Length: 315
View 1 (tube, rainbow, N blue to C red):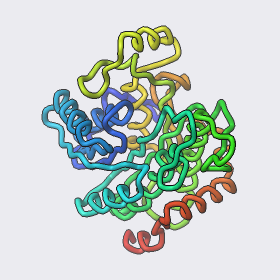
View 2 (cartoon, one colour; view 1 turned 90 degrees about the vertical axis):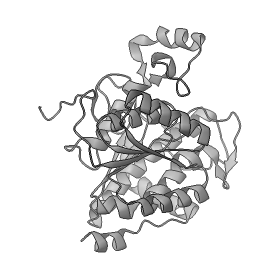
View 3 (cartoon, rainbow, N blue to C red; view 1 turned 180 degrees about the horizontal axis):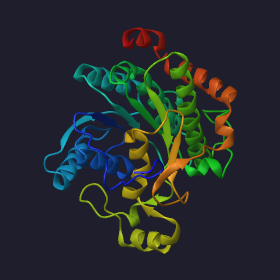
View 4 (cartoon, one colour; view 1 turned 135 degrees about the vertical axis):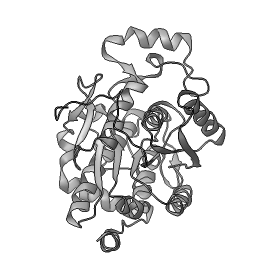
């Protein structure tokens, strides 16, 4: 297989590897879990709704009866939930990869708070920053990988997280885009810091293009779009894809043995297509702004990534 080739329908054998996926009960998170389980991985499905976790687990098992899967309650908007889930994962042992997919895609019309912070930023960014820091030890022990989920929107709109809590100027779209700019910036900053401290963990970012539920196969309890949604989404077929296809870039970033820390993956045609190496938006590559954002996340979450301790243990 050439270096830039990747067959998302024929993944490498992942037997013996363990992955945690946030937001696993719907959309990209669910299909990432399905693809990982189909390749033999042990998958930890996480989400904030216990009933939806059960339905997602059952759906994976219908497709892959021998799948090795567990479920775990985790609400990334709640730092107490993040800490509790991380403690459980650390106690369970091996962790080869962390896919930080959970997030609010359709923000509230007016600004809301979660844990004292703007809700979209708290859910999409702060919870994952804390989770990755809390799970750095098991990831390093497995010489693993973390993948942050960005968006092609960051290349089209310049909403950087200079005011993460959006105290002024809140709009739903700005909240979403700045959260995705932040995850991209943190992915790249994490990679810089992991390398600087010689911690054997890779940090990457991936985006799903323009993936819609109406272009995705129906799955009971997981993806059940209305006829209207199917109709509207199929009108956009020329530049959209299903969420199962959108998950391809996320899974490649998580599992491709040739992928390198600090890189980004997305659909070949930006909005759709096979997963390929991509280029993060220029403004998200600003190391100074990213360092400022990192410090702001440390302050907001009270989480300091244990680089030195993990490096000593890993070495």
